[in-house]
Image 1 (cartoon, helix red, strand yellow):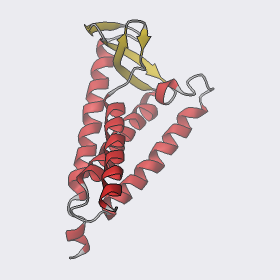
Image 2 (image 1 turned 180 degrees about the vertical axis):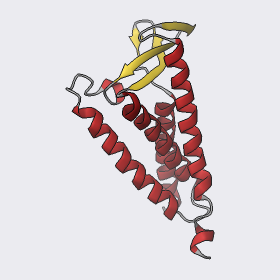
Image 3 (image 1 turned 30 degrees about the horizontal axis):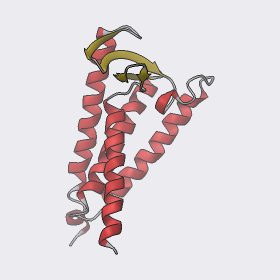
Image 4 (image 1 turned 135 degrees about the horizontal axis):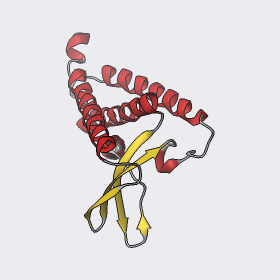
Length: 165
């Protein structure tokens, strides 16, 4: 098998990453054009669509820092993204679907949020779940892709451990 045949599935997984980026950016443009920051509409008793500007990381980690965190998060996401792209390109054809899908989802989500940080200096979050007085962190399509991708990676590792017993 040649290297080209071995890597022929990588572009389809990178296409999944691109689709995540496009869906993420379209949804954020829509939200930013139709909502002011903190404005919300209730969709379900447990779900609001809102507009939040997150200058920090997950759960607004380091949001109150002086601005240096923006560049750290951009750099970290770009380094991780390059690593994921290299990993995807080196995976042999027929690699575990959960592994490749997980990597592609994490890549698309990371780059979706990096685009926001570079373009506007913060990440637009808009999906907000709550239950009674418990309010969960607001998130977006990119965050969802990262979370689902991480779950795929964990499941792949669990299945791989069982296969190798």
